[in-house]
Length: 273
Image (cartoon, rainbow, N blue to C red; front, side, top):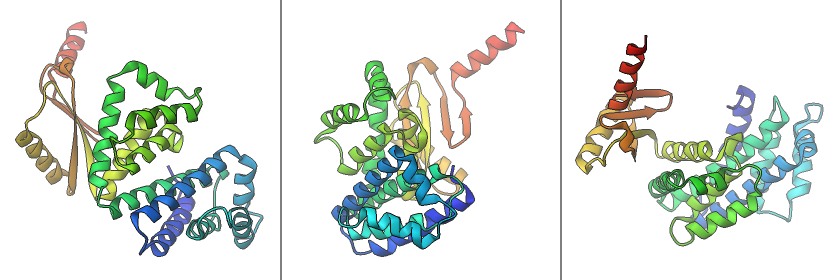
């Protein structure tokens, strides 16, 4: 989670991204996003650079010019200006610059998808890919192995997803493989689903049921949850016969577990006492 100081620095850079890309096409934004994420990867690999760019003994202009000298001629001018704005901010820890740069890159990917009117599809594709991985233990182990080279795992995912998902979806899956925000692959993917939904001003409800819901049942559940949370809710359904019946719903840190499995487990615990 970003500190208050980091959030302020991130907000300034996010505003800069919005103002400098206001008329950019989805493709142009995707290029800026790729470049920002490449810089985030560089910051992850170079702790000395992170420290130099967040050194409080250096003036903001000095830190900005240091980054400008490194990036000018290598990336788009828009990317340079956005990232210079970012490093000119204040930082409570060097690692927070890497986190904020990565988050800014993800936001640029989402804005590019929004510009192409593909946010809802990207959100759904990310969730469905997570389900595919979860249903295949060997694939889950391979993609979630932090000891395996990221390049090899990215190549595997590219082969799996080629021609099947939007470009923004594939790019965000790659971010998840790199461990978005220091999370493991599964948690990274879930967080990216939530950020994509949030970009549409939706919350995400993870729903577990024993059998597939009908469209009408899913719509009623979404309507009920939207009323509870005061905003639209994207319902993500996972079918798990082991819960036997009922429904489990998680929205953020809120969990409503009305499954038969939960009741049986509670009964077993009561008898054990």
